[in-house]
Image: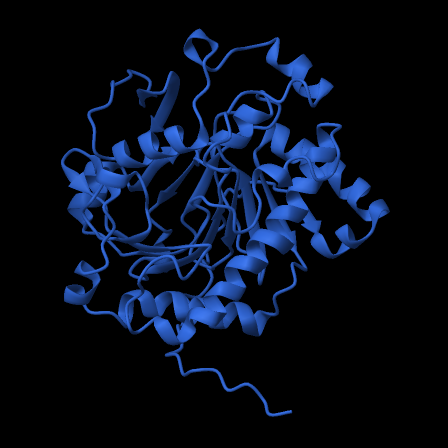
Length: 365
C-alpha cells in the first residue's frame, strides 16, 4: 500500500518556554485514554466534575494525537496568517456583526480593548463541516487534515468529556452528547489564532491586557497547549493565575451554554489573555482551538427534569430575567455580534457589563 504524502507546510517555530517563576493555576490533569473503560470513566468523572464545578478548567493528556500530528496542525494554523496575504485575507473576512458568526477571518483592530486601543489578534475559524465555507487557496491542500482535526476534537475529546460531565450530573452518559452532536447544523468550529506583540504605549493604556476577562459562549472549548505564557484564569479566590504549558496537552473549559444547561452546577470560568512575561516578549502567540457549540435550537434552560443534581442547583439562583431562556442560536449571535463593539456599563470594580437576552455578561479589565 503506497504511503500517504502530505502537502508541504512551512514549519512554525514556537517560542522557548518562559524563564520566570509564574503564579500558575493548579489545574487537574486527566488521562483521556482511561475513558476507554466504564471503570476509567467513573474515576475520571469525579475529577472532571470537581474541576468544572470549582474552576471551570482542566487539562488532558493522551488524547489520541501524537506530538508529530499536533506539531503539523500548529504549522497549518500558522499558514493561515503567514501564508496568506493581507489582501487575500480581506476576501475571506467574516461578517461578524451582521451574522453573529466568527466563521472566516477576524482581522486585527476589530475589538476595542480599552482607552482607545484595539486588539492585535487575527483568527480564522472553520466550521466543523469544513466544506461549508470557502477557504483561501493556501489552506485548501490541508482540508482533509483540518477535517480530521475537527472530527477528532469533537468526537474523541469533547464527547469523551461530555460523558464524564453527564456522569457528574447523575445523567446517562450520552445525555449531553445528544445536545452537541458531531456534524449537526451549528457553529462548532476549529479556530486558528495569532496574537501579535503590541507597542509599549498600547500596553500601558490597557494595563497589559490583550483580551479582556470573559467566559466562552459554547459547550466545551479545547485549547491545544502552546509555550507562550499569556492565558490567565480568575481563580475561585479572585486572583488571576497563569495557565502552564503541557507538551502535547489540552486545556479544556466549559462555556456559558453548558453552565446554563447544568443550572450553574458547572462554571464557565473567567479567563483572559495578557502580555507574556519579559522572557517571551516579542514573540507572536499561535493558538490552535476547537469550540464545540450546543446545537442552535437547544433552549438554554437548566436540565432539571433530566438531572436531580441540576434540580437542586437551580434552587439557588436564576440566571435569566423572567426565567425565559434563549436558544443557543439566539444567545450565540447576540454575544458574537456585540463583543468588543458596543459600549459597556462601566463598573467601579473594574468589571464592565452588558445584558444579552436577559443574561448579565461581564467583561473583566
